[in-house]
Image 1 (cartoon, rainbow, N blue to C red):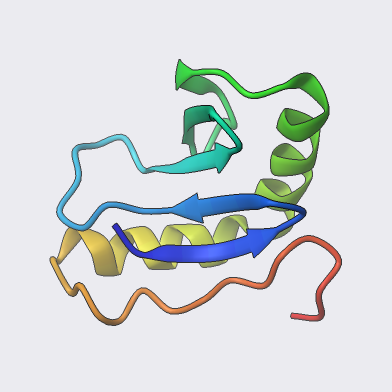
Image 2 (image 1 turned 135 degrees about the vertical axis):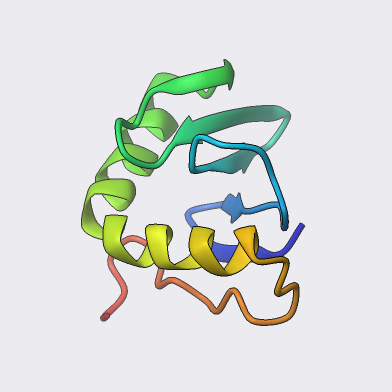
Length: 91
């Protein structure tokens, strides 16, 4: 599962050839959550409230890039998901 972004100790990853709906996995310390790209809803797991807010801010900023990465992952292209800047980084 490639890491597509890293910020404030949060790792954002995406499985290749994963199941719909489009989503990503957020890891922070011992917390893990699966988050729908389009809605921001946590569908599995949980994050501490402060971290969830940061991930949501990041998701809103990079929704187009996340959907593009999902399209690549859905095709099974394992080495080309790219990197999405972290929160506070320049696009």
